[in-house]
Amino acid sequence: TQLLEQSPQFLSIQEGENLTVYCNSSSVFSSLQWYRQEPGEGPVLLVTVVTGGEVKKLKRLTFQFGDARKDSSLHITAAQPGDTGLYLCAGVRAQKLVFGQGTRLTINP
Amino acid sequence: DAGITQSPRHKVTETGTPVTLRCHQTENHRYMYWYRQDPGHGLRLIHYSYGVKDTDKGEVSDGYSVSRSKTEDFLLTLESATSSQTSVYFCAISESTSGGYEQFFGPGTRLTVL
Image (cartoon, rainbow over all chains, first blue to last red; front, side):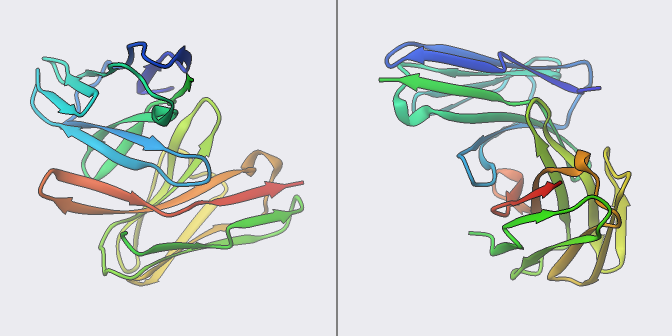
């Protein structure tokens, strides 16, 4: 049973388009994180959202935590080939992380 | 760089053989974790440690054991490897940061069980 459901699992779009990745759960987490993983490497943290309704921006990436702290979204504006990678959401619970399945994003030039 | 290394980086073994993967950290972190990553499943926690000789199970612990006799080393052992344990294994440490809480991951070990 996957506690965190990510969608879509695969996404291939053209450079310059916008996209949104969703992370949903029936459970409440103390905070939620988004990681990015390159081939052959471990995941690297992009952002942590803590407060319900919180919105954080990282250049062209916008992260939102749902009001009930059960879901989150990642929106990328004007996607670039350098955004290609595996994006993982993770719920934080008592010094442990629960990961979603991941979204494999491909941005075509 | 959180100073995490994993060894070996790649391993091919046969069903039924024992395998030990090593995670080494240089910064005295208390918490260490072992995950496996498989397509369609993201990362799943196998075991974790919250101090020397203090370990606990994660969500997919069957067939795995761990040991932590020193702060810097966390070992993952497959007593009798099976083909279902073919995966990429990641070690991680956790750290409290200005942003809250963060896990730092090692480079991974690709294990193939034939």
